[in-house]
Length: 298
Image (cartoon, rainbow, N blue to C red; front, side, top):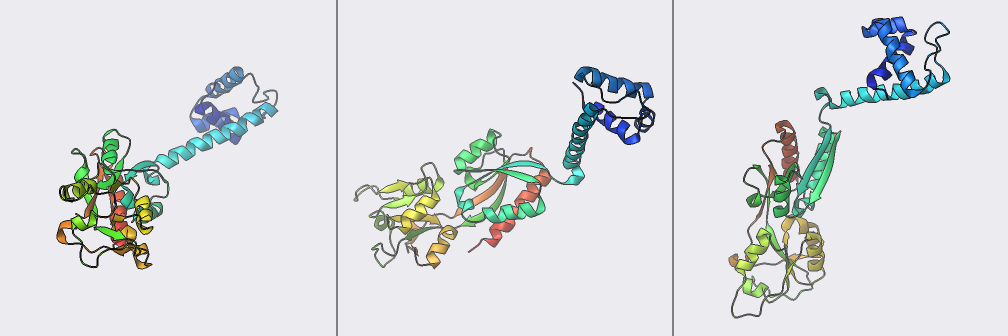
């Protein structure tokens, strides 16, 4: 029906007080200005300017059109200002994180980003590292904080965080006082990471295959659920140490002392993205992640 240039011309005619002055301001001929306005009037079936009078006198329909045209031009200017390089980053970043990060330093990272990139919008996904890797390759995520060993081969991988994976239990659970072996642990229900994760696979390799009944191994996709079940005495839980720190300090959980064979490999996380991402933006996100991770160390 009409375009942004038509709206701009009408606004300029009103601002300048006439067709001739607007033509001079816009570097157009007066006939070109008149033709553009007449075209809009014809297409919309309205009269914008009362041509029986001198100057740019708006009709009631013209005043209504001017209101809309002014908003349209203003919006155009805001869009241009917002996406210009000097305006800083404006847009949506899709970030995927493993659940361990949610319970340790994700909030610190996001707070830093809010301060340095206030116009950035976030889409957050929380999932296991294998799923995050697949989403990166399928262009469903821009960046992921995930287990380092599961990062997809084409990705840029920057280590950001390592934390111990520790056995915990409720103080009400009757456990032997001495360091427990993996066979000792297997006599109790064990609440651990979901199948397909590195901790689950490592635990399966450690568990004895002979001489004991099959262990009660409860795979849980939610670390929050693992924490609650462990705290309630359902079994021995395998948890990232920082996540359980608050409950441990409050006496709701206690660390289970084990021998070396029952010790689990530390969780190592990396900041992962494909090579075609904007280098400056990825650097800003990486710095925020590293600073937040450093501050979260227990």
